[in-house]
Image 1 (cartoon, one colour):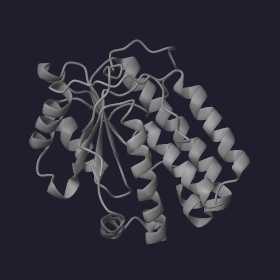
Image 2 (cartoon, one colour):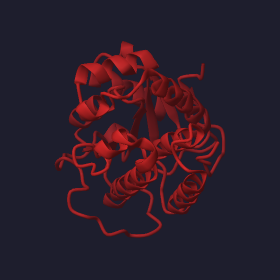
Image 3 (cartoon, rainbow, N blue to C red):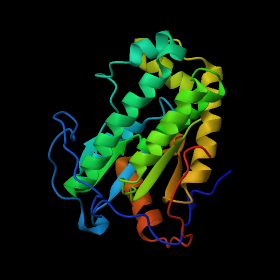
Image 4 (cartoon, rainbow, N blue to C red):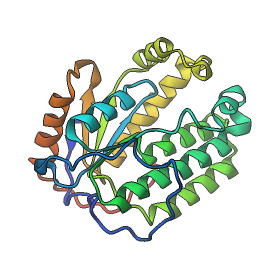
Amino acid sequence: MLPDLLESDTPAPSAGSAPAFAPQIASGSGPTRERAAAPEVFGNIFIGIAGMIGAGKSTLAKALGDHLGIDTYYEPVADNEYLADFYRDTAKYSFAMQVYLLNRRFQQHQEIIWRNKSAVQDRTIYEDSIFAKMLAKTGLMDERDYKTYVQLFRNMSNFMCKPSVIVFLDVSPEASAERIRLRSRGVESKIELGYLRALHEGYEEFIESISKVIPVIRIDYEKFATAEQMAEVIKREYLDASFLRRVTTWDPTR
């Protein structure tokens, strides 16, 4: 089991760091609404919420955004043009789906940096690589397509400043399956437990790798109580800790 917070030599670049380039921001890609400045204790912070399908990322992102008074960016689900086709014929649409998500999340990620305001993001761009790698390993994505996806991700990552901290909501595959059942999204009805177990294994590898680059706070979400308590956890673990490992890049294939 990984510790709740893995340490790093120097903090990851903050949301206030200057972006490598200035992308055009399409309408509809921004936060849900304008918010007041974040509490002074946090300064300018970019919080990424990571976790399995149904882990509670959107719920926590909204709660933290409301509590801290910062912008909240949600995962593109309702307007995802590939989602239904992906679940209907995963092998056929896997590459298109992953490229679509990478593009949308890159747009979000860069807007957060470019706006130079505190924000919380529901699922990080880095997590897309977990799904792509799993699809390739299970034969649901062509190896040639996977290599193209990885190259595209690496090229895009050259223009990305890292989040201040990632909050990982740790739930079991069984808990994920139950939460998917309870929220009853039609397109998710065919997700099998075996898929979620493979995804969970991918998340374990991901957290071990990404925590060497970006500070990670690992949370047992079954014990989560309130946004206030979660904000206090972030303050204690992120602001009051010193990160001692120096790493500058992250390889999505590891």
